[in-house]
Length: 321
Image (tube, rainbow, N blue to C red; front, side):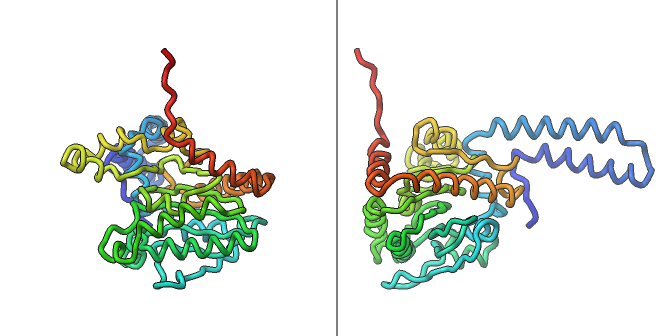
């Protein structure tokens, strides 16, 4: 897929074009551009390091919304063997925005569930832009119950702006579907590892996010509301989304400082969409490592630690007078 540069990446694109043009001249012996190419390549590396080491929260949001970024099915093709998709909630229907099934990661047999977006208009319509209906969360719960019954670790891949907010969702009780998932995920006796791959929006993300370990990719975000939604409420204008993104403390580094996630998984320079294989390998290694650690705990410890983890969210230490 062709990578469309983001606004803040345009200086890098200009340098890359100059380098390519000089390389053509050099290969065709039009000019001795060797030293100039080396100088520009050094400048490109310096500029790339400067930009990607100082990303603003809004720039990270732009990266995770890049249409070429890998989604759940892309990751499964890269690190999961024998994936067998399981469909339907046995109540209403099948939701393509939330997929799941049995798979093998390395030597570990797991149940994987995750949000799925599309790389083009046709795929996005099929997967409803990653916005799941109630039947999606009920399907996820059905699969998690199967995993619990057969002692399979659960891997949850989160990437959604939120649950679908339309009338159809309300008619089929979206709030109740998410609430039941939150309650039931605390009762499972198997390890649960959640990874925020891109967008982690509101209850739509948390509906499959109650996990023993919550991991997040370097440029991903996890938030109670989208930057645009926050800006519309606080400033009555979505143009303030960059300011809202900073105020929400929604990026991976901020979440790690607040103890809302357990690990930040590094991404390739420029984001996961620049090197799918590298990003997938990093996710695979992190997931397997945490599953191995969690399997050392007995059932009682696992559930107690999971409960304590989420009960601690929002605690504030006030100075003693």
